[in-house]
Image (cartoon, rainbow, N blue to C red):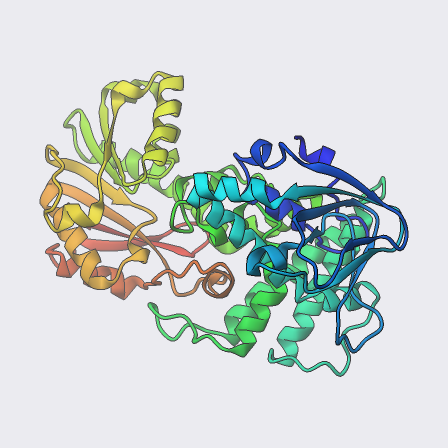
Length: 491
């Protein structure tokens, strides 16, 4: 079933993308989940869900507005839920009876997904079930912000409401949400307002910088300690980040870590995606952050270093190994620009992720470059402790541009010692690492759970020396954004 058929829109209800979160979690199993879907219509005053009764499925609102109320509720006005809302999720998660009554405020169209269909999916594919439960958890986290979102939409800044966040940060969050709400309304107009989009980007940038300033890392290895302020910040911003393509994938980590090959490929492409136009605009805000810029710039730096390697030795073929290669964009950059090098350079690309290697292989075949490149699936930790082997002739260049900032000094030293043992005399090791002066670190550490070990020049030289490279043979170089640092050590 096409997502447009489901009528998933944000409408006038800011960031109510619950059905979209559910569909993203069911990707690959949507047809099965919706095979027995029921189309439902309700008139004003009709009851969709009755408190105390057990719902037999999840209800996805396609159009119209409903109101929720429950026993013991202090306010007479319950929360309003619009298009895109998911109902019955709490009963599904906890089992048993509904915790609230939901009534139609106007004519409502909805889809009911039977619980039995979801149960079949979970039993058949536990990983799919995990994604489903994570999406329902995200939906409920978003619910906690419903009242705040309504206040922002109506121009009320929550006066008198106490927040564990510092006042400056709380104000920055409110400004960002107001900008997002203004853009959301503007999206329904025929002529987009460039000023509103610029203000959204500026408010996002300010929020990211302020997060880093208020919650600085304890050290290169340790982020700021968690606390109520950071927990409140995550609750406020997570629904927005989940609308993006890049940040959402980093947060979700479908390959087990934030910077997987596809995430890096998206950053290289610098083309925003996400849930609807607002999601794409927020993704653009993220892709404009210094950390994402640094990822794109390091590709150019590596291309430059590969060209230098060709000049440093006359031996051919030049033997080059990329560790944790990911999409290996820099390899394609140089081979597509200089096709004659396919006969002069022998690349070995190593990654533990078979999907990354499959991605590279497909592109190599498409360009007829598969003979110039050797792909090897290895666990680099196992390589450096001798549990796996990789047959390599002495290499002229070995590099890794997005790996060691996941590892502590002990592991990096062992890995770089192994790299040194694989180099020919005069061969070079190039290792990339995020520098402590990373303006995006607060966002990475506290909101995306992309916690890397940041290192400075002295750290990188010290690690190279500890790996056996002679003192004075290691130099450091930054990419254009000054966020990614590279140590270049010569054997």
